[in-house]
Image (cartoon, rainbow, N blue to C red; front, side):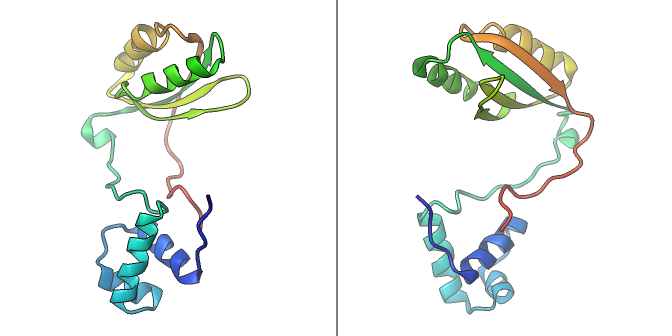
Length: 154
């Protein structure tokens, strides 16, 4: 269900997507309202589920995670039970950072981050292709990230 937002709400979301650590006073100044109504608006956006949370963007290579890859996974059967079971399995795999159910030649697209190629290969061979629901796996290793923005353009 879509939430109705006015121009101030959109400014708040745009600013928070750029810097979720700013104080309410700074946010209010940036969007042109006083702090109390700004805080009320932010809380309303949080309660409505528009703002799902706040997090730090980490530099994966500086933490020893040098490999980013995508896996396109095709299941043996696309029954609702199999789709749900595979989706649930992805939640248990730490190397899988994001997962989407997709249409087309594959059933799922997995965004994976690993320490190195060996760790990624081990995951693909020992975990992913070994899953009882998996029929095909196509992997794409990334070369470098060229764009990184917030999820929604507002």
